[in-house]
Image 1 (cartoon, helix red, strand yellow):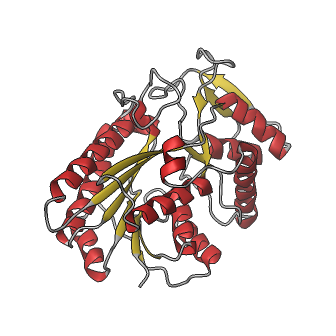
Image 2: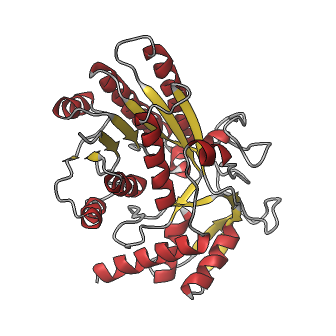
Amino acid sequence: MAKKVLVSGGAGYIGSHVTVELIAAGYDVVVADNMSNCDISGFEGVKKITGREDIPFYEIDCCDFASVDKLFTEHKIDAVIHFAAFKAVGESVSEPIKYYYNNLVSFLNILEVAKKHGGCNVLFSSSATVYGESKVLPVTEQTPRMPAMSPYGNTKTMCEDILRDVVYATSTQDAVIKGIALRYFNPIGAHPSALIGELPRGVPNNLVPYITQTAIGKRECLSIFGNDYPTEDGTCLRDFIDVTDLAKAHVAAVARMFGGKMKKGYEIFNVGTGRPVSVYELVTKFEKVSGVKLNYKFVPRREGDVMALWADPTFANEELGWKAERTVEETLASAWAWEKYLAEKNK
């Protein structure tokens, strides 16, 4: 019997790519999503790529305990990959209650229901934002977490701590929960098929969809937040990772759990490339890849942004047997192919 994995938030950007890779690796996948920040086209794209029309899909809100409990009653879940969260840094600064409620309650419900149904493996979608404005670069898993720069980042820190405490508490109980937190850096790009990619509702909060929407003519001008940072070109430095590479890290982490290879009940891995790229550099690389000259302007810094953050991914490379493979140029080309696919589809 194939192991069954629940992907909460599985119709969203990262969740859809992870679902594709899990199915390719031979797992049975159940997808749950409340569709608050995506539409059904992402899930339809997953079915096209995998050739699977029978993927169980639950349109539920993980903040609703009864709905999550019903799903676990109908399926024997062996592992959960939890994505269901709001993720816009800027919005979290202006709407902290929305972020604390959704991101904490949804995860607490997943853990409580998993425990109620006998325990399982839990893979938490964390973030490099837990490092805050780190004094040491690149960051390793041992780099101290700094005070979060945003409520969004703080929810990731809090959920990591919740998972750690639940793992410890259940280790001597009948319903054991084991946990892995993957700290992502900056996922970008789209699936090589151009059938799934990042599809923000309204104005994009992330850089690459804003770049591609500006290039296609959907947005008039790209705003680059801050050109006065103490970096080579004055813009922020980030670790941009291809979303398919990121998805494969989840498959490697799940295999580690199922294979009994975890060295502790709770583990943390950085998922990044280890190569810092500035925001301005990313914009110029996109122009070269696409052949499109972007209309952009520099605007004041955005609240909640850190100056520089990139990973030391050595631990994930060695322990998970995983490594980021695609170049930034390849990833930007995939994002552009996705944007053009959307434009053609919506004609």
